[in-house]
Length: 228
Image (cartoon, rainbow, N blue to C red):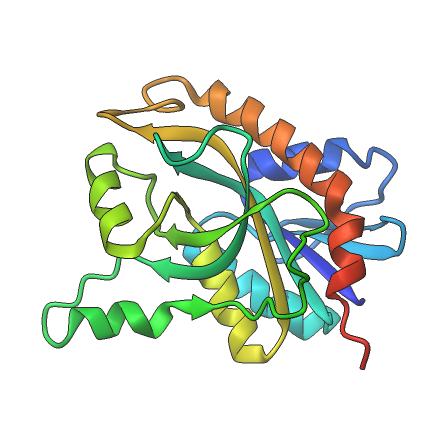
């Protein structure tokens, strides 16, 4: 398949499946997958949440389908005051920030898993509105009291759980990678929109974002497939 679309968490996947009710779903070691025409055939693959599942499922998808373009569509938590719910982010660089190295150089440890995505194939005028930015990833929800430090240290405006792993694996395999994440909720000022029993904020946000991203997908794919 030329294109594999990785979708991580279950709420993102549920929103994706709802858009393709006629698709025949199959199983992998990580979750479901199906093929749909958008308009060319594309594999939609449920990779699972967190860095472990994201890395393993990205490698599985690359080995199994050998795509020329690996796409990750999903959500992220935005830093309050830096982005707004519904903003679409085009990820240029990922940083895994929850690495704690106490024996040698902690900055070198962070740098080892940081990934600069090659987006030179995209034109200056993007096919759909999106903000080019860095995304921080960790196996944890964003902590309100760390938002300021993450912004100052990395220049981040949002965070997620999986993008850092997916970008790193794609780069190691030499596979073109496109990561688009929509801001589903905001974190900051001592609170998170979807925290403390308000998960429905995230679920509703995820459904709206996945609908938008998949509707826009053909325009991104048209630019992203290598000609050789």
